[in-house]
Each structure stands twice: as C-alpha cells, then as structure tokens.
Length: 291
Image (cartoon, rainbow, N blue to C red; front, side):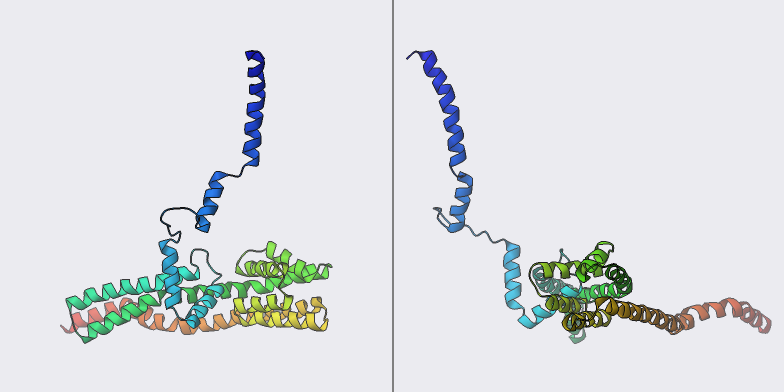
C-alpha cells in the first residue's frame, strides 16, 4: 500500500475515531466531581461546607425550636425576604448582641458602676431583638397594604367569576393584573394547589400567612362555600361589599383619631410659639413701661 493511500485512510479514520470516543466516553471532570462527592478520591478530604453554613447550623442548634418557629412565622408574615432567610436572621442576632455588648462595655469602662452595667445589658438586649422589631414592623406594613388592596382584588375576582371564569382562574387573573404583597400571596396559594396541596389547606395557609381578620373571614367563607356547594359569586359579592364597608369605616376611624394625635404637638410646639409671637411685643412694652 502506498503512503498516499495510507495517509488518506488515516485522515478519515482518525477524526471519526476521536469523534466517536468523545461522544461515547463520560466526562472526566464530571467523573472526578462525582468521585470527590462520594469520597473516592485519594488524599486529604476537604470539607465543602462554608463558614456561613457552619454558623447557620450552630445558630440553629443553639436557638430553641419554639423561638425558631416563632421567627419563621414572623418571616412568613413579612413575606420571606430573599436577602434575610431564617438562618441569616439566627446568625445576625448573636452578632448584633456582641456588637451591643462591645458598645456597652466601652461606656462601662469609662464610668463603671451598677447603673452602667444595667445600661450594658439593656443595649445588648436591644441589639439582640433588633431583627425581631424590624420583622414585626415589616409584617405590620405588609398586612396594612394587603388589607387596603383586598376589596379591589375581590371586585376583580367577582367580575371574572360572573363572566364564567372559575374561582382559581379568577384569582390568577386578579393576581396577574395587580401588584403588591396580596397578589404575591395569591400566586403562592395557586402554586401550592398546583403542586398537589388540597384547596382547603392552601387557603387556610394563606389566611395564616396574611394574618389579618378580613382575609381570614374571606378564606373561611370560601372554604365553607367549597364544602357545602354554595355559589362562589354570591360569596364574593357579599365579601366585596363587606370589605368596602370595613375600609370606609377604617378610614373614618383614622380621621377621628387625627384631632387626638395633633393635640400634643399643638400644645407643646405650636401654641408656645404662637404665644411668643403674639404676646411677646406686649410683654416687652409692659416691661419697658414699668422699668
């Protein structure tokens, strides 16, 4: 066989063999990763757990289970912010307490005494419970926003149901056409139903996460209507009317509280300045006259 024919055969067979080997053989990098995960590699084993994961595990072990469940409920009420999961909150609390202790000890070393020591303990406790206070305020603001948006969402769902759309489809359309925490909670409830949870459990879980009476009353009405076969349109109509009445009453209540709220600023801030402006020249004139 001539060299030209041998070169031609090698030029065809070699690329075809390499292509077949590259397709049929497994990835060596993937094989090394699998072997490392299974502990089959030689040499000293390295822990893949990061420092943050270790801190989160230690904080979860040190925190009582009841308190962790309470914090998790607060996080659910605050919408479970992605930047602050439960593990990060559990790690941040002792770190803030240590920072507060360091600040308190700076005051204690400058002026030692029992009162300063009590101040150190107070600063430490305050820093420890700062995440709890922030979560509570965030949950309150979120519940207020959901309570304000609930009548509008019910009106949208009522329009969709009266047009012939199912209740879950009406909830989905109302959530898609709205923004805010209530729309997010509706979308999460629909996702829970789609992954296999029962409607009753998903709706009751929605009421527990939201945590304000109007939505819980609506959820109970929907669960009872689904259980006894009551028309959803009638339930939505009654609930939407009741929510609008409650929103108007809540606005009137806030309006009635305004005079009481401005009473103390009026007495201690506005009236003294007004008295100084009005009576100041008269008092100065009287003092100048009798002097």
